[in-house]
Amino acid sequence: MKTVTMRELNRKTASVLDAVERGETFELKRKGKAVGYLTPAPPLPERKANWKSHFEWLRKQSKKRGASLLAEFDEDRRRLRAREMALR
Image (cartoon, rainbow, N blue to C red; front, side):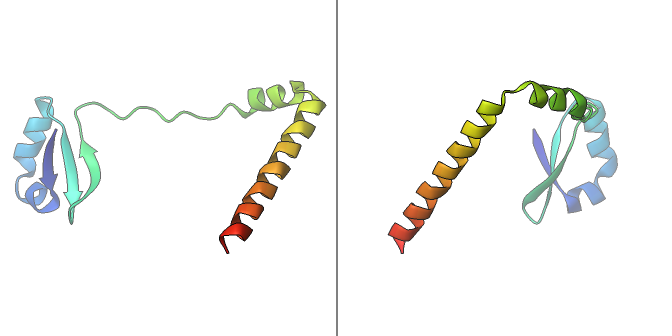
């Protein structure tokens, strides 16, 4: 993957786009930090959450599991509090 700065892209847009058409990929940088990529492939479609199936799964979980999970959270919280107090 090649790197191109914003200044280079401004000055050589046509040649960079020609290279992208040939299959090359560029990392676009501004002030030394990567801000994007120029690739010949389209971006992957965003995956959307299937909330209906998620809530159905939650309803099927047992009540006991929920109580034990809350107990685990409480125990973790107590341990973190004790660690913070020991560090003071």
